[in-house]
Length: 371
Image 1: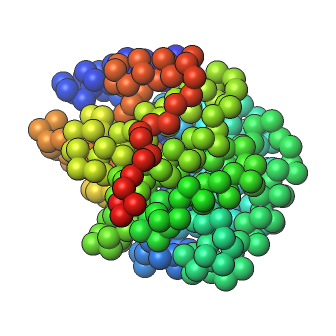
Image 2: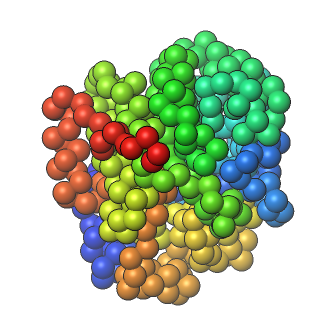
């Protein structure tokens, strides 16, 4: 897409010099902070806010225009909102994104399946990705980490319902957060979940975020534990076919390699961050954040008459960007990092090389027995 290509080509100048001014191409929207689970690695349900309604979200998306290429609608559990399809269809109508991603715990099977069908049929030019969250391959252990007895069975029912739709613009993914709760159980977790035969299988490390209210919980895995988990996930996708699938896999190789080194203490492993420049996160109450890790607000959309551009180009936003120019802020946040990698020439050169060569694992998985 020309609009995204222009943004990526001029991103470094926008970050370094503040010109040409760009809108974000990667936007995450927390439709709520509510959740019916109490997971061992997340406290987001403790955030109590007045959520934007569907009409208010529509005004926000209209003000963004066609800049966003990738929209993520997260929570809490996003499908707790019965109007989630209305919100997303408003976004696809105004923004025309290439990809819409929804992470879900899969509890509300009928609501997820009916919603996915409505979104896909209502926006046929947008690829909808629903990533169902699996924390373990053993049902009882998954339920324990999730704090929700019976959640495994519901997840399987939801996955089956989604796959039965057989819609060309629907991808059903399996997503695992590698944390202190399950890091010792890989690669068995990856091998077990691969048997579910989802359209895609991804993993990322648990993070301590202001958004999730998990600061100080010690949930982030060590690099020595994340490495075999990442390698096992890639092993189960080594036969990816098609140009897009190969590029996504090659990006994951780069991401997993960077994250493993970062978790092992290499602060310079992650790419230069473009959060607040090319990516952003909007909270359920309308706060526009640089990202969900810092949750540093540029202002609230209610105070700007739901005009995103007023917040994005405000003095408060520019103050943050100057802070970013003067410091190296780095973390393993997957959503932002994939955008960051697209701007880094060296990373994209390796991605291009890995697209045509025999698939490789990101890092050595051989570790001492007591690692």
